[in-house]
Length: 97
Length: 130
Image 1: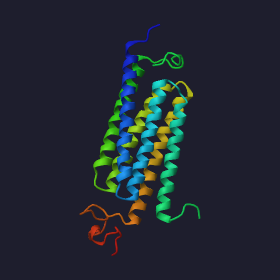
Image 2: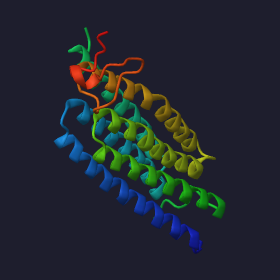
Image 3: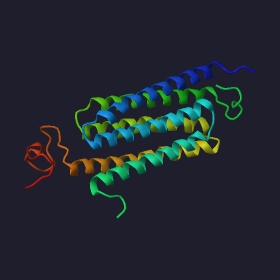
Image 4: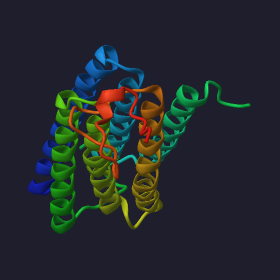
């Protein structure tokens, strides 16, 4: 059976959003490299983590593979924990006392 | 879409329209947040751009995934992702901004600490010493 016409539109929109999110993640890496202070780099890495969450969710819809949603959730958890850890390291000087 | 995996989810026109609109809104907010991260002058302003706009964009895209997958269990996991993003983004932003303020990153000129009269840029470290 042939797919309806709107599925091609969904496919095109998802592909464009994937390309846009990947390009934006590359642009954010400018702030990681050239950020004047350490908190700038932490904010940029947190943004990269959020972008990768969005990319994993888009890839899950695009390929219709539902387990990439789990990849997205685990990446969100890892991004939060890494942000908290680096902020605590910058403030306190150590992570586990 | 690939023909091998097309048997898992059947998408009607209403659900396709919802997925398209949520994906477009999420892409717009990701773009706005990234422009704010690149163009704003200070750590605090950049954090404002990323933790509001980029989180809203990623949550909108995850909500599109939830609309797409929802009769199956993966849609519920995507809703959990949305809730987790909205819970953790303010916490992480608060901790990074507290770390930046304790490191002595100055505010933009003219910005004052709430409730005080002295200029925060004058003493450099953002502490209010009155």
